[in-house]
Image (cartoon, rainbow, N blue to C red; front, side, top):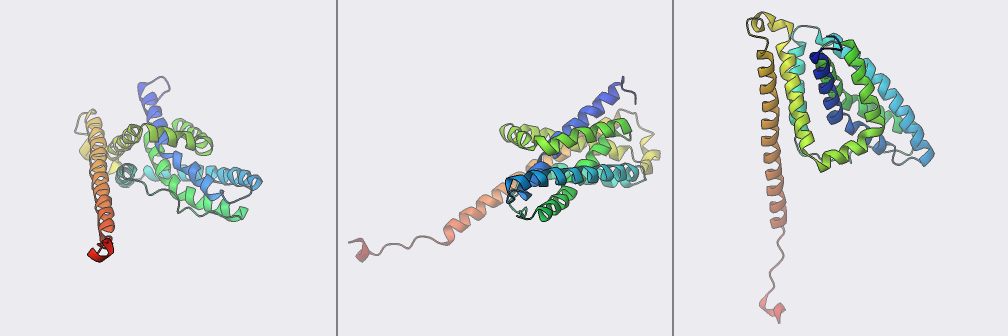
Length: 247
């Protein structure tokens, strides 16, 4: 996959899209974990926490690439990507559960644990979009690092203003999942009998599946939340005034 090919630039656009959608929350977690520290220590927590998180992300990416070369693991990874894409479209509960601390080392530890959990989806998606191309993989890492450290607030504001970006990103994850599943060596004997364009039809089906299921579950979640709210409002009705008290 040379830099002059359309395949290279298409993969790069996928990586940029995946990073924009999935990297935003990481820096928010860093800020929340450090919010109780004095201003000087906040900067130290962000610098040390981000630096360690970046090293961890590089190591995770290398492992992800190696694992995706094994049979069946692309299929497993594609299922994980589908789940991540659907989860993106579900209503958020917020990040208030992130623990803050007035101790620098505790804050850095919280940042590392939270970033480990939240980076797995980004790493798998970028590795899949790169298609084993190490140059693209390094570009993906290079893009994700400033997004994690500097871009979260801006990205979250943009996504709040134009929610369609989240839907497009979720669809992109479904598209990448479809491509990755089709390319798994375990089913190569089956897929080779079809035209190359079939891969993109499967990828498009993955995108449609994620957006459709995500919207369906999101609607159901919102309806259930509204029903619970109405029940809670009706559970403690105001006592009716007696005729005597009305006088």
